[in-house]
Amino acid sequence: MKAIKFSIKAIAAAAVLATSVVGAQAQSLNDVVSALRKDATQLNSENERRLAEFKAARDQQAGELNAARATVRQLDARGAALRTQFEANEGRLSELNAELQEKAGDFSELLGQFRTAAGEIDPLLRRSIISTEYQGRAEALSDISQARTLPNRAQLDLLWKAMLQEAVGQAEVKVYSTVVANQNNNEPVDVMRIGPFTVFTNESSPKFLELKAGKLIAYGTQPSGDVMSGAADLVKAGEGAIVKAPIDPSQGDLLGMMADMPTLGARIQQGGLPGYVVLVLLAIGMLIGVYKLVTLFLESSAVARTAKTKQAGSGNALARVFSAYEDAGNDDVEALELRLDEAILRETPKLERGINIIKVLAAVAPLLGLLGTVVGMIKTFTQITLVGTGDPKTMADGISQALVTTVEGLTAAIPLILIHAIVASQAKSVQQVLEEQSAGMVAERAEKQGGARA
Image (cartoon, rainbow, N blue to C red):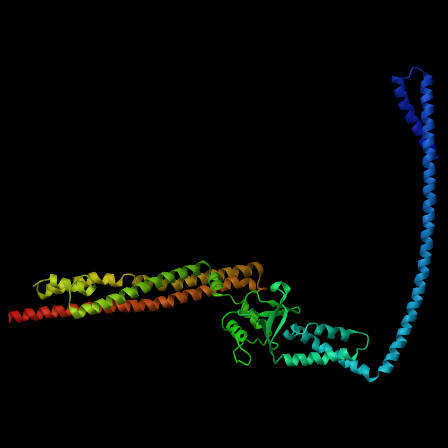
C-alpha cells in the first residue's frame, strides 16, 4: 500500500513537471499524455527494482540472524563444557594439594619458615646499598617466597647466601662496577662502597650517591668540606692504608641533609637587599680601615725617625711641627706653645680622617641587619596568612632572610669595631708623640730663656 501511495505521489509530481514542460514545448494534448505514460512506466520499473532489493536484504539479514543464533548456541555449549572441566580441575587440584601436604610432611613447615625469613629480610635487602653490587637478589627471594610450588635446593640456597653477603658486605670497603642512573648515560661506572653506609664514585673528585627505588643516583648538590675531602682521600689511598672516611649510619639521610645545606653564596642571596647593603658597607669600612692602618703605620715609623733626628721638614707630622718650631724663631714660651698647638691641630684632622666613617659604618651595619630581620618576619607572616602553617617550607624563605641579615649585620659590625679601635689607637699614638715632642720643645725654650735672664 505504501508503494502504491508513493507511486501515485510520484506520478502526480511527474504530471506537474510534465505540465510545466508541455506548457512551454508541447503542441498537443497527445504529447502530454504520452509523456505522462512514459514517466509512469519508468516509476513503476524503479519501484519494482527497489522492492526486489528490500526483499533480498530482508532474506540476507534473516540468514545472518539464524547464523548468529547458531553460534550463540555453540558457545553456550562450549561454556558449559569448560565450566564442567574447571570444576573437575578444581576438585583434582584440591586432591593434589592434600596429597602434597601429606607427602611434604616436615618440609612444608620448612617452606613456611623459609617464606617467613624471606619476607623479613626482603625489605632490608631492598634498602641496602650492598644490593647494588648483588643485583636482583631481593627480587629472586621475593618471587620464591610467593610461589605456590615447592622451591628446589638452589632456590633455598639463595636465602642463606643473601644473608651471608649482607653480613660480609657490612665490613667491606670495596670497589665494584654498577650503573648510576643520572651519570655516564646509564653506563656502568666504578663506585666505592663503605659497608652498608656510604657509596660514592671511584674518581679523584668523587660524587656521593644515594639509593632510590633500587637505583643509585648522584646527589644534585654534593656535600662539601671534610666529608668530600675524606672521600677523596679514601679513593687515593693505597691498599692497607688507614685514612679518615665519611660514614653515614642513616644510609644516606645525613648526607642528603648536608647536600641540601645552602652554600655561602646561597646564604648571602637569602639575605636579600638589606644583606647586600650590609656587605657593601663592610667592604667600604674594611677598605678604609686597611688604608688607614697602612698610612698610620708609615706615619708612625716616619715620626719615630724624626723624633730621633730632630730634623724639620714636610715629610711627616712631626717634621712639620719641627718646622713650626724653627719658624717661631726667638718667640717667648707662650707664643711658641701657641704655634706648636696650632701645628698639632693642623695635623690632627689628617691623622683622624676616615676613622669616624669606620665608626659610623660599624654602628649602621647591625641596624641594617635588624631591618632585614623585620622584613624577613613580615614576609614570613604574609606567607602564614596566605597558606597557613601546614608546610614549614613556605615560611623558610622569610625566616632565612630574618636570620641571615642579623648574622650579616653582626659579622660586619664586629670587624669594623675592632679595626676602628686599632686605627683610633694608632692615630692617638702618633698624636701623643707630637704632643710629647711639642712639650719638650716648649720646655727647652723656657729653659733657654730662663738661663738668659739669669
